Length: 463
Image (tube, rainbow, N blue to C red; front, side, top):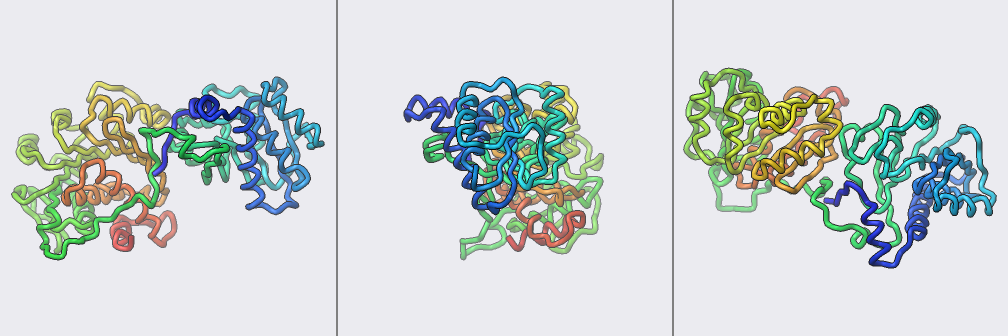
């Protein structure tokens, strides 16, 4: 689990103030880190073109050109005629060594984007849009210095943004690199130290990036046990019963000792799942919404919900008039996809926005909801899942397009419900369920288009 930061300028200033480091020292270490990466990954006979802007990101790129000069064939393209003070200093150093400057972008093996770093917060003008378009069309491996140019601090991707194969980011991870849209442009992300350990450079942050090593499976350590020792998941089985069956099967595979589908009709379900018209009195977690439709009246739903069980809500329930009253519950977890989350924001009176607006500012609207409902755990689905509770936020970046298939969300609901049944808190259940979900997808040995939910459930057994 790593810290994420909305900006790092304040961390740089703390280095100047508390550690007597200077802007020049941090810049030299940034350039040295990039040079070290390139030396370890690319042969010295390759042609490297570095495109530098006029600010500090451009200065990092110019310093990189100086460090690689003579070890590689280096071309430096200066995109600004109005360089800042540090850029001017780095230009003087590069010129003194004889670094080659070019007026047009050459064909090259490796292209380094050092136009704009993490400070970009404005829309790019036509000149830079055209330059970025040309850079993207070059047949070269591409590295972004700090952040791909065109990717903004809030995670919004501009109409033309540098598409990197690798992003070498300075000092710490920036939250904006983990929006859904950013996944298309960042490539592999590596953090470079700036002359001191990240443990000293970073402060604690309330935003965290989850890693595969954060997954803790619900292994059974208690030897003197029975099926009741591992919880009883109840899943409301509505109009589209397949959703509840998938969730129930996932819950059973992820450790729930018992799983009951609560339904009004007798459904054909797998033998290992139970079925009832009533909520079992041994229930330890409850899930509602997947495929719900109009199978239950609101009076029936109210009766089923007249308890203080840990509750997962998904899908159809978000548009139900009962939903807002359920936000008063303790141990509540919501798992909407973006369209459903816009519905939640609307019915809660927080925002009336389109899905497009939400996707441009996912972090903002997750924080908005969690601030107003601090006792509720939110899991917003997407290419990069966001999980929030009160003032603590987590991003799971391990998702892939293989999961873009109907039923994947029902499997996720089942995994989380199983963990709730086994006594995990809603926040921990959301984190661990999400990590298991995305990690299991990595174990499915099929083409990216071929995943079925049952493949995903089977892959859970191999984690």
